[in-house]
Image 1 (spheres, rainbow, N blue to C red):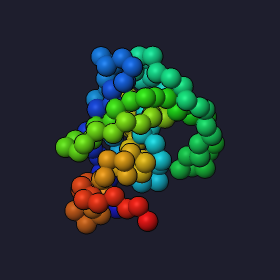
Image 2: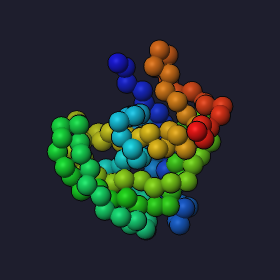
Image 3: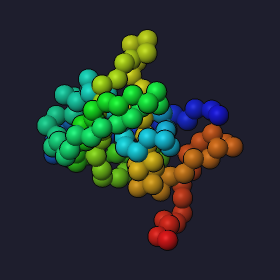
Length: 128
């Protein structure tokens, strides 16, 4: 399977000048918008909503910090208002890899086109 990476802009709704723009891996196995804890100070003062246990792909359990409120805008899709999950991450060759999880995809009405290796707009929200 190929990798889908999207440009994303995350804005602190309490301090509009605190913005992070980055490329993030679309990960349908992740729930949240996941950012490295090393970037948390760049987001200004955010409310810590809760701390949660997270299971990584290697089945390691690590603590994460859910913070918000933020606006998340992926490429050409409508922005959504949500939370971000800050985790201790190890950069690869000095570069962090943020993740876009399924909650953000669903809120944004975005689906993964597996054949075209791209993100597509979902015209209807499923309420069933």
